[in-house]
Amino acid sequence: MGRIYNGMPAKDLGSEGWHKPWSGGNGGSCVEAMRLRDGRVALRQSTDPDGPALIYTHHEIQTFIQGAKAGEADFLLVGPSMSGE
Image 1 (spheres, rainbow, N blue to C red):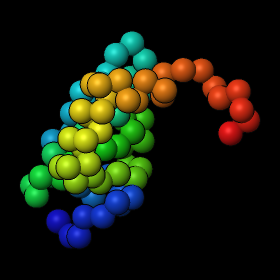
Image 2: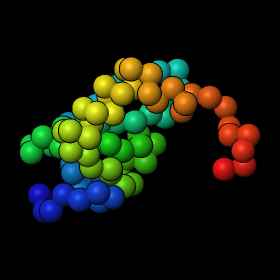
Image 3: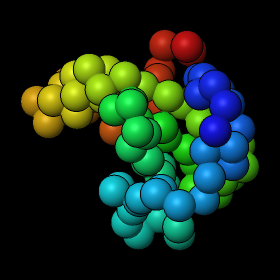
Image 4: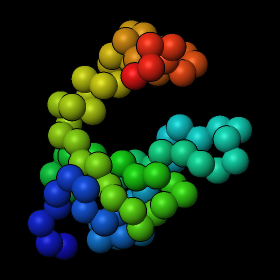
C-alpha cells in the first residue's frame, strides 16, 4: 500500500477490514471504519465505498468518541439551523 492520506480513495485501502459500528434503521447508509496498521482510523460512507476516506489519528478518534459519549456532539442531532448557516 502506498502513502495513506486524508481524502484518498477508500478503495485504495482495500476491501477487507471495514466495519459498520454505527448502522441502524437507515436503509444501509452508514459510516464504515477501518483501523489502519499504524493506529490511525479511516472512515468512509457505506453508500460510496470507492469515495474519499477520512483519515484520523488515534488521538483524534479517541477525543471524538469520548466527546460524543459526553454529549458534546448532541448538537448534530437537532434539526436544520434556523440561523441560515
